[in-house]
Length: 346
Image 1 (cartoon, one colour):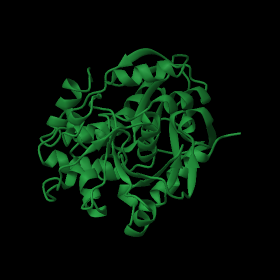
Image 2 (cartoon, helix red, strand yellow):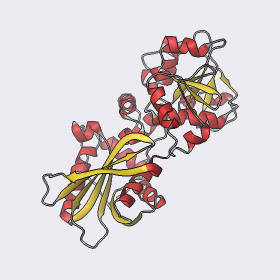
Image 3 (tube, rainbow, N blue to C red):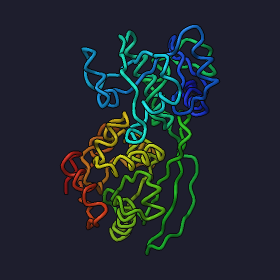
Image 4 (cartoon, helix red, strand yellow):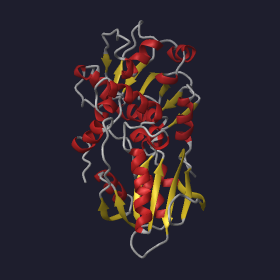
C-alpha cells in the first residue's frame, strides 16, 4: 500500500495547518497566520527552522560548528513575531524590510527531523522556513517516510491521445500520475519508430518562458526547437516535467527573479532563498521513459545532470546531442551562469 502520509502533510503545510514529524510540530512560515502561530506557541514560543543556505546569508552558521548548508534552528525572541519571521524567511524582502536581530541559533538535536521538515516545505513549493513547536497537528508523517518519498516509484501511465501539432509528423500526448504527488507529467511522442533510439528532450515546465515568451530564459525557444529537431529526425519524445523554476516552484522562481533584479545570478538567488541551485530530480523522467518502453535514448541536452539522472534511472543515453540557441540581451547572464556555474556545455 502506498504511504500517502507525506502527500497529506504537504497539503496541510500549503493550507497553513500544523504538521507533526516525529515529535516536532511544524508550521510553514509562508502560510502561517497569527492564530495558528499562537496555537503552536502554547506554553513556550515555537522556534524557527531555516535552511542552511539562508542561514549562511544571515551569518547564523558562524554560531554553530556545522556545515554551512546544515539547517539552523533560531530561538524565538519576544520581538520575533509572524511578520518578523516572514522577513527572516524571505530574502526578496531584505532590501525593504530591515531585519531586527540579533538572532540566536540553538543546538539542533534532531538533524534528520530538520531535514525532513525542510523537504516537506520544498515539496509544498514553499520557502524552506518553518516554526517548530510541540502542539496539535492536522497531519502526520514519519521522518523515514518523508526522506524516502519518491514520486517515480509509484508513477503510472494514466491516459494518452492523438494531439495534432504544427509539425510534419504524427504526435501523441501521454499523461502520467503518481500516488505520491499531485503533479501530472506528460510526454509528447513525435513521429514513428525508426529502429534507432529515439531523440529525447527533458523539458522542465516554465510558465513564464513557455507560455508568456519571457526573454529572461531560453526555455520557450528551447521547447519549440526541440520539437522541430525531433520531428526532423523522424522519431522521438519530449518529456514535459512539472518542475517549475529548477524545482523550486513558480512563486519561489518569481522571488528568485526579484533577487536577480538586485544583482544576484540564478545560482546565488536560489541559494539565498534556502534552496540548492537546482532542486530538480530526473528520476521521474527515467520512470516515464521506462513506462514508454524506451531504455535507450539520444538525449538533446547541454546539461550533464540529465544524462546522469537518466542513467541512474535505468535509461542509457547512447548519445548526447547539444541543444543551443542564440542569446538575447536579457538572458546573456543567465546562459553564462549555466555554463560557468552549473556545468552546462555544448
